[in-house]
Amino acid sequence: MLPAAEQEAPAPPNLERYARAIKALPGAQASGRVVEVVGLTIEAKGLVCEIGERVDITVRDNSTIPAEVVGFRAGHVLIMPLAEMTGIQPGSRVTATGAQLRAPVGRALLGRVLDGLGQPIDGLGPLATQRTVPVVSDPPHPLRRKPVSDPLVTGVRAIDGLITVGKGQRIGIFSGSGVGKSTLLGCIARSQNTDVTVIALIGERGREVREFVTNSLGPAGLARSVIVVSTSDQPALVRVRGAWLATA
Image (cartoon, rainbow, N blue to C red; front, top):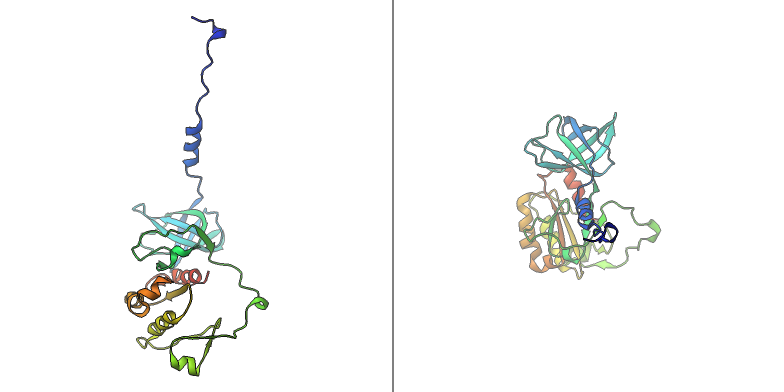
């Protein structure tokens, strides 16, 4: 047996696995409780968050309802839901996520149909995008905007010949139900020689979405389009966010 001074020193402990385990632990999350619900507005207390932040409301069956912070009043946080409110009761836990709504970007969006929150609803799997951008940003400087000088060919002779539309111009299409607004929109989208077309169907009836995608737009138009859908039966905040998402 070697003297104590000549014995080999024990190998240093391997701390890498402990470091990986610590990194995998979820961070601390601020949470509060629901105190009142009036209409579509939810009041919560004990929550530290900011305007536009996404929060999750935990209901009785441990499922969560996504919501968004829209204001503050008398020390309480005002929240609006992004889904059905069924199951919310006084004392329901509200957890801050620290995240705000962002729009996915990239060519992987071509041919996809998204909901008002940027999630795919076409059954083609998750989005293969790598980048996101904020849905709310400053508008372009008014003196840096390009003037409307070139005509936009819509493919409809009556419009092109009598009420010519210019590139960069905003136009409104107003009519009663069933007259053909979506059909006209699909016709304009198909006739454009563009790389990408972003189409937002906000407030449309649910049964009209598939008809627009398959008939009005068609496979060729869909292949170079990104469609954002927020139907009339969804919460008002989701419809607003859908418009923001499409114009981000």
